[in-house]
Image 1 (cartoon, helix red, strand yellow):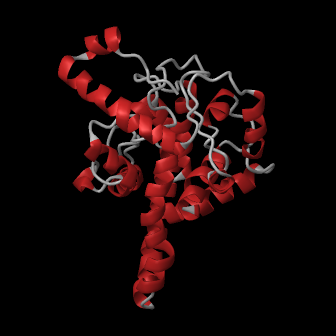
Image 2 (cartoon, rainbow, N blue to C red; image 1 turned 120 degrees about the vertical axis):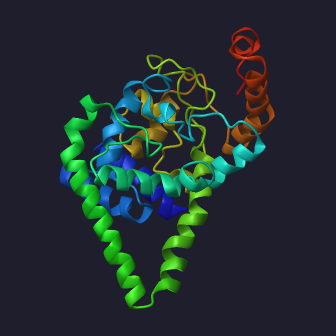
Length: 283
């Protein structure tokens, strides 16, 4: 869990340049925590700005446009389990693993893609980062070739599996359990920072490992607040957000009992049913 959340949340804070005073240290640490998880901080930073600018806007938030698992309602219980386990979907049905591979390979060959691994990023945005992104993705893929070559040459498969691959496989679902509903069932209004993001309080151990990113509404409303100040911001802003789940378990209970049935009815009856009859589940 710590390895995965470090890879995601620490990278996230570092690309915001709020984790450390030095921009160089932020850049170095963002790479250090991204490599074990097969993600690329240059690519993430490119898309993350639009995610903050157009939060939860179906037409402009890159996470929603690609059907990112944190933003799209699951269509049933099986889809829900796939989102939690981070499998299913993507190329060959391997979920995030095939998606991350597609992102690295496509960007390395000069095709700048979004969160699905295949959706092209608009040329106006892509051209600003394409040379650097292509270079670093090639270097990153070369790094993995060297790492796996060394593992094979020295027969280190067992320790690599025990201390790297297995923690990744186990940690991803645990991370998704707490992180999946950052924007689920929230308003699709990027101008309303009090309603387009959810905060979910968690035990100290979870918040510590997630770099306090469970206080996600506070982070989106004031992205310049460093991670260690978010609990304090949560106390001062209490009552100002429209979507606050009391716990991750309560959030998942709502997901299973209210949101999935609503989504199924929406597919059966159409969007008109949603506009006239759907009332967001109370939280």
